[in-house]
Amino acid sequence: MNQFNVTKASGEQEPFDESKLRRSLKNAGAADEIVNSVVSSLTEILTDGMSTRKIYREAFKLLRAESQRVAGRYKLKEAILELGPTGFPFERFIGEIMARSGFETEVGVTVQGDCVTHEIDVIAVKDDHYYMVECKFHNKKENRCNVQIPLYIQSRFLDVKNNWTRQPGHTGKQHSGYVVTNTRFTEDALTYGECIGLNLLSWDYPKNNGLKDLIGRLNLHPITCLSTLTKAEKTKLTDKSIVLTVQLYENTKMLEEIGIDRRKANRVLKEARAICNYNSNNS
Image (cartoon, rainbow, N blue to C red; front, side, top):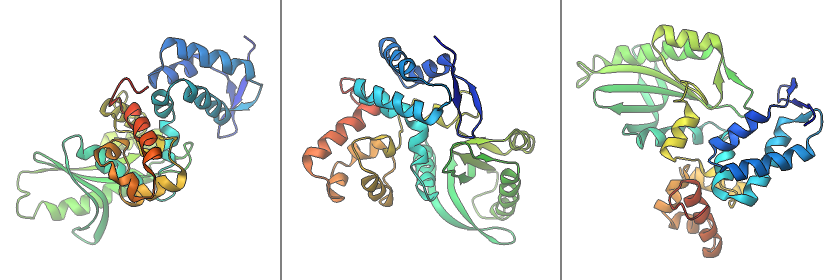
């Protein structure tokens, strides 16, 4: 095929990498025949300088015609961006992921530090380990968490830890800080976090255990993956702290509560089950 350049969100151009496209489709669970079909159709409409965003949209459109399950999983990064514009739905999303990973969690907690009070996004406890989790949500995927973020969070964590360790029931407990972002950390931020012992979680860090990996393994996809819901309906659900597709078929009446009729609710639930692999026949 002819060599094309694509335009990234930053405005930079780079050669179109077919293998990267194939890998993203495979990671979403697309079978080989679907991957080949999507790639073949896309290469027919590629033009030099086409934006990566447009390529993504075209790929999603083609995938949706083939499989709701794969299409929903393919749009994961964009779906997390849709949890905005405020950071609270993302905080709730991270809290739910940690809760379903065996942690006891609280979201949006005011905690007294040694010097001042702090608004903590998520407090997560497992066994004898307490985590103070700060969530950094970005509306644009090209935005990064620079070293100032972990520096600031570490200072807040130490203030809280100094107070926690003097409280009843905390003797012998472990305390750690945690920073979670939906995009990526800069190299300096990663180096500082590793050096100081601050836990960092981003879209693809740690390697093979980043946010995208956790979501895939646990089948905990955000409701914004669902194409059967409008933006307004998704907002109504996140306002009620419903942030995961799995929560919809755990509480099927929630769709009715936000004004969705039974016929549409069945379509939404079918897509939710398909994305979560709840029923492999619904793909």
